[in-house]
Image (cartoon, rainbow, N blue to C red; front, top):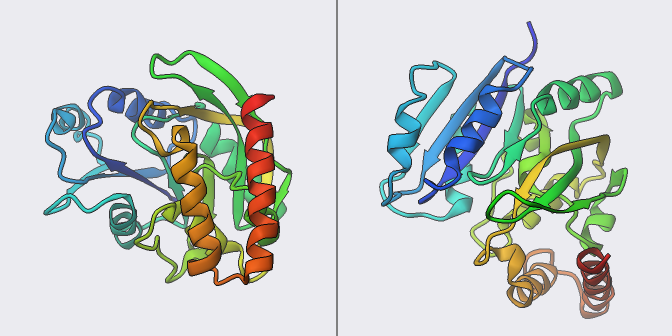
Length: 247
């Protein structure tokens, strides 16, 4: 039997796009998965959408006792996951139908523990904006220069994650990825468009000033880089960010 993949999806007032996200999992060509939908105390109709799919035993619903944010919500998923591999999928993103099959096969054949892929930016209506091409290999130092990993398009062997969790800081996903790669691990890319990333008007990705401040704080406070190192990586971060959004 193929290894079990645990898919962790935080849900918070996600009624507009949630069904499309769930269907992109159900329609996967790879069938041995569990989808952990962790509701971060939504106040909209997200549960009514989820409820329709709970007859599928692979789909699990959990609800936080209070609104706790994406870091705690993903950490709940990590604690409850049973799979050999961990995948993340945000509640407004969409997977290509053979994403899991191709990534898991690639990881097994190449004996790697992290795999990422290219993706497409889409707007709130699903219109494609641009294709995002990532580096073939991502190391700790490369990632410091530019966070090329989007949570929805990464698969990680659970053994590598171990006790690593999303920290309770801004840009918690970036800090989590850095922790995974810090001891010499690398992420290899599968040459395939693995999904679509929705750009929301109020999303972190659309607020570049806040994102820059949070990135600087990770360099200085979380990674504890000295001033010279921080300036070096931050300069690269700014340059690569401008290049990505303009090209």
